[in-house]
Image (cartoon, rainbow, N blue to C red; front, side):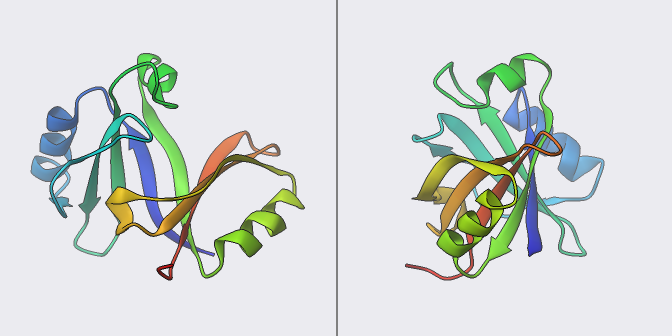
Length: 134
């Protein structure tokens, strides 16, 4: 699997975008969007060498990352590109991962399907993004 981006939970999207662009030299790829399924504002940043950071600002308690934000936010997940999301989910489940969310179309990622899993071994969240469109 290849890393697509790193997810980072922030308290305030505008402050975070300013910090990443002014201090670290990232570029905001597109407009900040609202994801109604996750109850978050999302922004994708890109560095000059192609690294991507997804900024995630939870809006309310309905957001799965809301409690994480209240604890200060920060690194949330690695997102990996996969050709077939269903096959990848099954393979990861067989190696000790728990499925958190089934595949859904992601507004920030051109409506490609994403799923979230939890690694029991290292207590980390990972996201899978399917490289093909359905």
